[in-house]
Image 1 (spheres, rainbow, N blue to C red):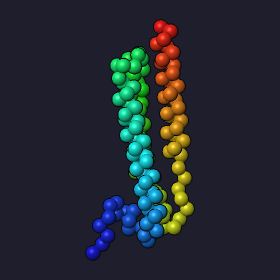
Image 2: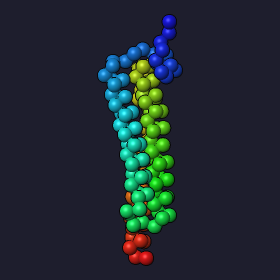
Image 3: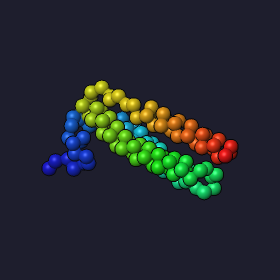
Image 4: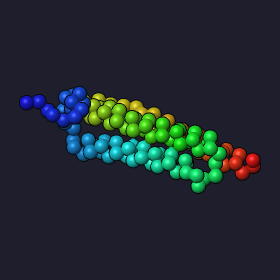
Length: 123
């Protein structure tokens, strides 16, 4: 009887690594999922009528944060898979630009928020 773990294409590759490495990979995956949840919470907060932002700014930022949350969750899954395969095959760790992409995107959104607040104050 074969291995029934999901995803099979990851677990069918190579040998089981030291469990500590797989658990560390899992914790990193969960950290990315928590980040995605925080982005969803941010989208809800930005869309709140309590913030005195123009409507277009609230909607744009909320949608942008939701897209970032989906991207973050997607990156978490594919990063976990790539690292787990690397651990199982004893190959070099894959490169990862997801953190830089996320940080740059959040920085850009903060800039948009600042511009929106400034425009709402002076108009």
